[in-house]
Image (cartoon, rainbow, N blue to C red):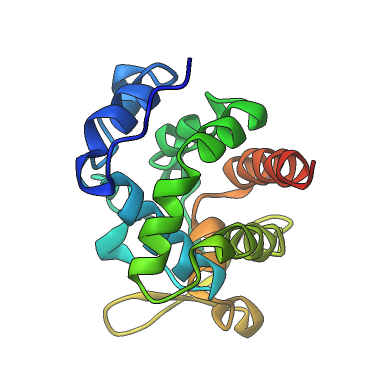
Length: 195
């Protein structure tokens, strides 16, 4: 039997319990468990536009800081990528079929949350697809990623990477191996959604 869905305002407990069945405690510890659906919807809506909505991120930020290697050229320290590995586990611990089943189950609530921010609720699947497409379009660097030091931050030395949308830069920051894993999941989810 199908249990009736709670309202959007009362959905956290059910949604978190459902996610908890798939994810290890270590990975669950990274999730922000209030307003899960609204948070995810706003985050994905921004991703589709190439933006990273930090305030609406569904997960905590990595604790370790970004590190670089100061050689003849300034490059990203590969150890820097490790801090994203637990986040990639969130993605890889559910199959694409499970992710889409989960999506379908909560679609009425997802549509409600999307309507709240001023869209037609049923347009969210299109937005999700655009977000996936944008992330899949992230270039995959071969070898080191040279950086330039800005006054307080670092920039990519290659202007075409520096000009990428924030969402693609975030994926770049995860490093090539993590990116491959994330993209593989996204491709599978896209296939499942198209069924």
